[in-house]
Image (cartoon, rainbow, N blue to C red; front, side, top):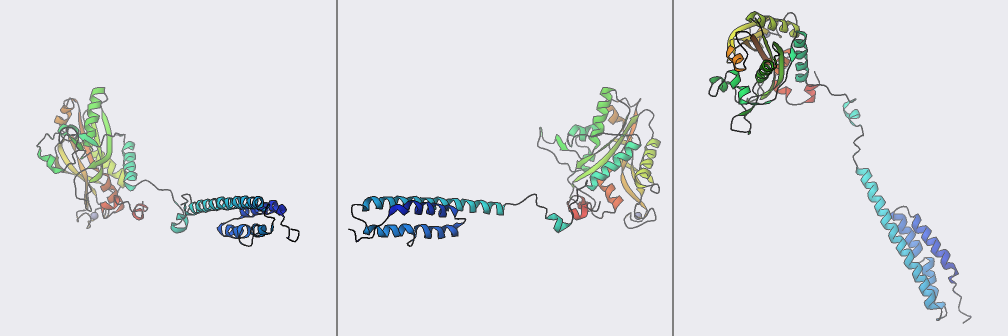
Length: 359
Ligand SMILES: [Zn+2]
């Protein structure tokens, strides 16, 4: 027995301790493979110990074998756990690397410094028009874009079947009975609402403008849009004459377009005004000299106007023998088009920032 080299298991605790430390220190999968090789591989101290078991006295072998197996078992478990940890770390790192940083400012390098946006040209134009009219003593009023047939047509002297309804192809909404609720085809319903309210609450006279979005089933082209913006004006007061209307249009034209732009009225027809007129202003391109935009005469049509039909006043219970008034209206989009020389109205709806940034 004494000729066998003694195998001391005294080293086992320090081998185990060293193995634990090496496996825990592995920083990535490659490092872990190296550590496993060194701790559990064929040339590892533990493998050496196991190989020397045969030199032990047979009575000691099972206990020594068990101690070595327990150490191996523990170290294999540690290696497995470390592998899972490293895989999890790697998955997290990949997630972070792939995440889009929404606060990152790349636009700066690509497009130049970020600029704050601004109001759309149509909104700017609407605000300028409102300012001009407010300066002339008007108030600004608004109304709903989905209207009943009564407000959009009937109260404006257009009963069902009236030929003037055919002037506009209307978007009807699937609400209530068929063809009773419409997307308003003009801002005129707000006039009816104003007059009703004023009459009921004793708030006459009225001096108001009504800007807003309107809808007609137009096929969009350079001069027409299915969604467009109007501004209308309404004055109901005592002793209002056609002269007041003409003076108001002329004052507005000079105030908004400049002192060298004038207005003129030409007879026309609208169901809710009598008499009615179209109003034209000096061509803003040629200033009256005549050009292709105005087709030579030096005048461009801007909108319609007229004296409020007494039947319209009566429909909202305003006494036509006491009160009279005038109304006018024109397109805000058209106004912007003329002031800025925009060739095609559709540019206003296409949301191309290269176009919008110019204003
Ligand atoms: Zn012209």
